[in-house]
Length: 260
Length: 260
Image (tube, rainbow over all chains, first blue to last red; front, side):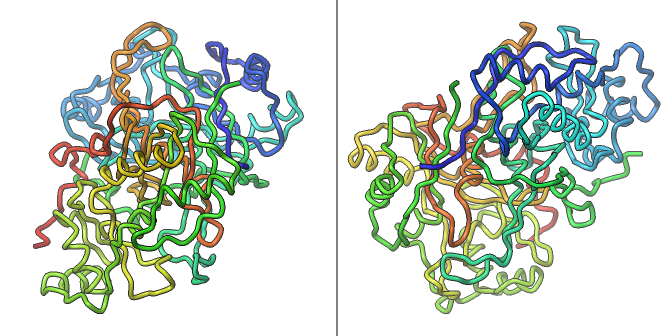
């Protein structure tokens, strides 16, 4: 009876700028009664990575541009938040009342560039940006976890995205280290020996991110770190980039008008 | 150390029309060395449910309409397959070379109405439609599993969907029994006691469907049934309907032109 286990780490403390995340994870593993093993996947929210990296902005310090004011009026959002979104983004994909969907400079399409106002030290005026280079953060964390625990793990840094067509947020991978983020099955045999065709790509890192959401909990009862054990996805390197649909092949991600 | 286990059932046979899926699952549980427990979630692909329900169509029997021929030319697809897609759909959302995205009569938006050509008895001329009423199929399977095993489980029937913005297919729930498909967290406290707002809805049944994809495998090595243990999502009733974004609030799912 082999399978995959998803284990949420308990007793995780609040994270502040400069904290050693690997140290906090090692302590939390002890509280949880778990020892990391080679090939475990450590799934961490981008939120705590950002906090450790000090990606906080004080909203009163932000001076919105004229463009940010126009988009804020259209989307009914705080002009200072919109200014930060624009600074983090390559282009606006859709703007509607209540909706500001952008392509982040890191390549992925999401609402308000992943900018987050909740769970930031009880202060509504502090805004959390995404990690500057999540693939690099994942690699650093992987190396640091090896130093702390001796285990060669994979790391997935996650964000939470809404989606067209369906209700509710799923997990996605924004940073990946030491695992194959996208598995291509095309050409492997189906049940009858014919090669699989068509939709034979599995975004394993996104699926792991969504699986982590299932067990992490949310709010006061939640944890930012989940360990997935039993997957066979280890690789020498890794990146979240293969998960991004190229702009030119994604007709939903082309801006529907000029938002400049 | 509590968490969630995802266990793929091994030794699952090929499914034919009229087969008792609960019986096959019970046999496969024995092979896997697993006993179902109350509150387990049994995740089953729509493909085997459709096969058991005899949702097969012989392609040479299909006579494409004029509209199907026009859309087949636009999308570079088999006119007979397009005819079946149109019969299964409420509206065409996007048609491009290689792409035919529709709103299925069951409400969800997906490519070619979930119509599937692979793994159907080695015959390229047989087409598998989705189950006629997946929520009802899930309920029937739940009741039949109780008779076979004595366990009160939840059931999720899945399909595999591509997605805008990102590469690769994820699992989605098309039929749900005895679990809360969508959990709403709005108003619960965050880490600092403030109520969670905004994107505080989790599509638990979709997340379970994606988690199952992680462990099910694909093609000749795959299994159509995964058991998820350790989730706290049991409910008296259940339906996949709350996962569907209402048409009028989903600006991506409005047809971009008249496809009639």
